[in-house]
Image 1 (tube, rainbow, N blue to C red):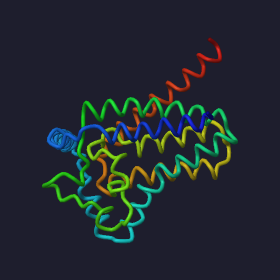
Image 2: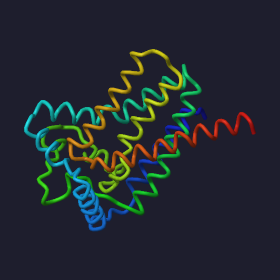
Image 3: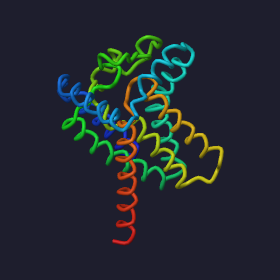
Image 4: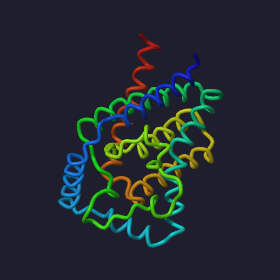
Length: 226
């Protein structure tokens, strides 16, 4: 069984476990309101304005919806396959850091379920993917893999950063580096503007994945020098 096969199995199990976690709507909505109160306290509750601005422009909504959907798991899968063939060190770091961060995130989703902004009432959020796009993670065919209340941490943000770090660690080509940096930046915008995450979800996702990356680096060093 190849490394790529183990990664595929690991990610499949991650999404199945995440999707099978019993939905806790009341707790998730309460936790989301706690996040909103915190963001208001620090005067950084800007998600409704960005989301409404996005929803007022159909073309922009389509673009950011597609960024959120297609530049997440499809890009990860393609990059993982390519790295497994041409950049083994980057593949191993990416594999380990994704598995570490995925495990931590599963615990977080269980202990602290958070409703995405699009499901919160009273703050004028618009679910742009539902309104403007045919494809969505909430589509029926994705139901076994989706937990509506797994917004914190945002691995859309965190795993996009891991792709950047993996590319930076193994490639000096500036076009390639810039390509993945642009994907990361677009994903940061998309998760907020589509009302799928609060900015705090993204920040925590980035922190979790940075720690996972450092853990992957440490484990590699221990294997080399142990």
